[in-house]
Length: 499
Image 1 (tube, rainbow, N blue to C red):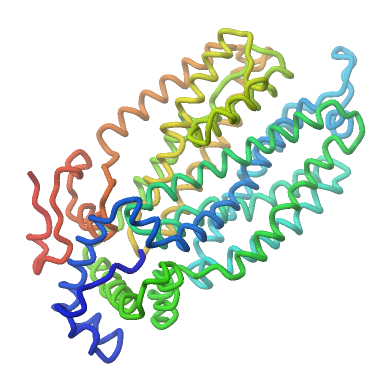
Image 2: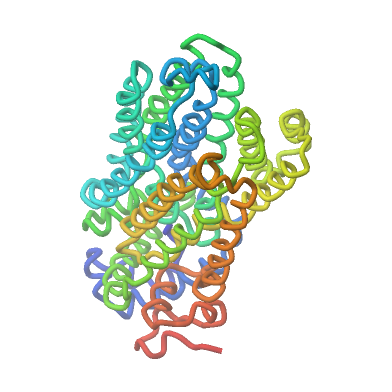
């Protein structure tokens, strides 16, 4: 939450307060300042917010860029299973197939290795961010990526490769759970949805790069066909760490640690040059009071909705898509086409040149493949990105980081479940469901839609204190949009008014 200018002449008593604690404890002063700030934030348009908070946008985008590494490796590892050089190095020779093949159990293990490490990384992120802040944890995670890539690059056998992938999952879990929380804490309401959704765009960018790298090295028959793609992961951590070393800490975290002067400097860094010290001080004073007030009124129950939201996301995401109707090589190419559609869905406004460049890669022959690609396009322009905004906006202020971590852990757990049962549905020697597998996931998608219709609230345009008050008063999710909230009313009963 960035600073909102307050009318200095009308509320000059705020400037004369001797300390932040004096301001925070003077409920009358802070109530009026908070009310004005809320009105100003609601009236702030997207264009005005971009001009007022350019540096907040810059740092949020840069932190989210770390997600590219996770998306890259997710595509890369799965694509390696069909690469001849990788199969010959790590697989076994099957005379009936007249070639090398990675066994089913090892495919499942490697496919889930990143998720296993990411679960541990999410737990670590929720704990260490509370102690050390976003910036320090992020820098350590970038260092760990650079170190763990050595393991997968020099791996001579499957156990070593599996260990490296699990360890790489640790910083990925940190990036995936940190980026939405950080973006939501440094940006105003007008930018919050855009920058939290950008997290998923970075994941799609990583998939696009991974698909392109795999496509380029697929024809090679030497060990460099899979070692170079692994080595490319060294490109990201060092330059990102060099820049993010200067990233500002979340002002909310600094306020929770009672480091008010640092929070004031951080708020000024996130805003434009026109932001004054008085504006920053008033914003920090409101954070002091909001942290105390929300602790009284927040039920903390919104975390369960976060977890369920991300669980249902996976049930209708790319994980359950079946490629059983096509050959192994075609499946890899279809995966590459799908990530190209992700980029089109997000950045279609870049111009027609993007479509022209992606044209040859998106060329398809099968009607079924066209249907899958159309479905993927709809996913990447709707459900895929919006979930990141939901989990960032429905978490309680003081529990945001931990709540996002729990939600992401739920997502990874379902990913492991899906990655385990999906091969048995498709394997010709097991279920052999082929295209009928889609019917199973259609059923889970319907359940997700039904739950979302009744239980997912509308959070657009709401400040965090308003959302916490709505949850604390157990307002029905379907009535969120029509309920008027006065977060700074004198009594709890007068804070909400349902139409």
